[in-house]
Length: 281
Image (cartoon, rainbow, N blue to C red):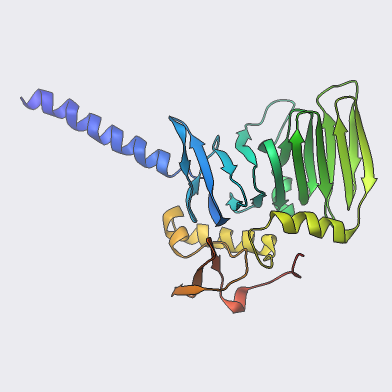
């Protein structure tokens, strides 16, 4: 009887260790949501409803419904915002002999996404928004990808941003984007146009769940500090990531204000640490 009990005990301990390891592998959290959004994650084949402050993992496939928006903080270094009717998958690729840095990838399957990446993190990690027609390699930090069909994709750069757009057809090649430019990608070409700052603000404003946007670089640094002081779950309980305006009912915990209003739940950092950028109209 004792002999059979010992292997069973080890099996239970092994299972608990594996479960804890999987739970610790979260790479981000949902920091804002309005409307309906789902996540599809192995081994569960069916999409599951996603909520404010839920964990995110590599290979998660995220979807937003009608009149819905979602924003997430990934690895304390990038902010991903999805428009309605959008679908994307989060991926990470390990370094290779020809790719010395690891690569974080947003695989945009449909709709629109804005990726704001902390510039310091680009020294260690490459960041891409990938579609069927082309890849946008982000060089400086703010980019919108828009895929409304399999035949045409657009990438837009914000103020001070830059990217390299690489076509899936090697014969078409690649084009560099400077700040405030649009790359229109077709099956046989990459066309570059200039855009105004107000046009970019209109595009990015359509992606936001609501309200003014907190400086995501500042928020990434706050995330780094919190993550260094506590576990991932403890960090979430502090209300990591203030990315939207407030309003409605509020509760205060450790100086952080959680707000729920109109189906949108956000978390607001204390005023002493808040840095709000101009509202996006």
